[in-house]
Length: 618
Image (cartoon, rainbow, N blue to C red):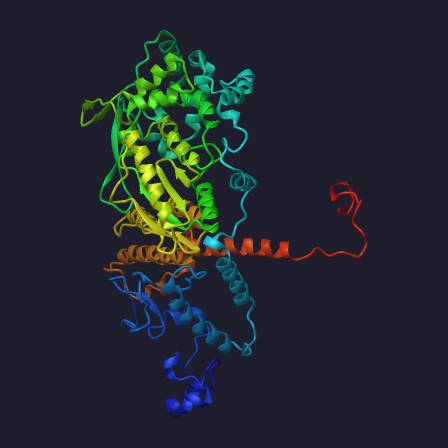
């Protein structure tokens, strides 16, 4: 004991009974007391077998090999862990408060042991507290400012396309056609003689260029149609194929091939989503046709429609949803159309297209794509309903078909947000929500569609609902459970315990998936989800390394010290938690600088030339 007392950071053990220590204010052993302090900071406390929370093989948090009784709150998820220097951000989930209390105690004792005065504010701690307060004050976890285009979308009433159209995507449109677009839309006129624009090899070549630039890397070797030709193979003879397509379109002998049936897994479900993959030459014609007719319908689409439209995204849909929720429309009809893409009737869809396009050859080309058939297991089936998912023109046709539903909502004065076939109806009371549900069901029956009775429900904001990968509940949102399971499934396939290859190469392979997930979910209350994902992924990587050293299982706690988080960062592993911390620090600094007034010498600034002309500016 005398030798230990001379060590730096030694704290005298508490003496006396528990009641005497409580009266004197001295912390007892049950308050997290520890005799000898580890001078390595927090990591020593977290990796200690006495003061560390780690994951057991069942995924439950353990403390020294035992389950902490009475500390895990109700609804806490499995998989909580604090390995090495992992740290949660914000107050996103209820269980984070339980973990933050342990860490705060460890941080405070580590600072006292390092010689910091009691009660002195740590600059790093105050900076993290400022980021936490910013995340709490901002509704739904948004810290970044909206762009000018997003602000315009929210401020403007339902109107066309958010302003100007990017005509680079529509090279077949001449100046005269652009000038006549607004006039014909106002008068309800139709467009004639459009098919001649498809005969020009320049426009088919431009369509192929856009299609060719949309895929890179290994994606160019996938997604072949029934002819087995990939994008890379088509690019080797693109000029010859485009010339052949021009001649077939001009002579009227062009016939699209059946689409190839391909299934992809649905997130959080054992069911699979059917896709229809056209051949590359059919994709080129579809892209040219989409570029030709999209401005006609884009000019009349309403502002609450966000799916697969230029200048729109899932984030603009979430922005509009949050604006409606903040205005008091907290009753939500979470609706789902049963088998939407498989149940669109061809005749009703062509009637919607014929409202604006009267060119019979263009309508015949759309009909040919709809009736091309589906090849599955070497058998081709034909039908009178459905537009296959996977085609270039399918999202535009879906928006055209559902535009009639948008107009009915608009005429009824309802609030809604729609992204393709995924939509929400918003109301101030439950009675209004029920009326909106009944009206929507009636309109869809007229269109030949039905709402799914199992998935459609009326829910209050406080109860929570899912939309576009997010789970909204109260003033917060975080990645929904299906999104987390989908991420883990992708990472699990790339981190199998027996996979070969050096660890830096594995970390670089995981970076693309992690970066995409981070950029989508960073503007939300995602701190604890990111922390759990980082911990879970590093645990799998450590199990790979442990297996290569001829040891089985997930390993024990000492692996956190053998391969620390900094080692994985040096190998190039993308850290979700650290990236989120940097992202919040950046926007915290931006907001702080905007609140601080600019220094002024007292002289009037009016009339001074701008700084770019040598002046100070005003």
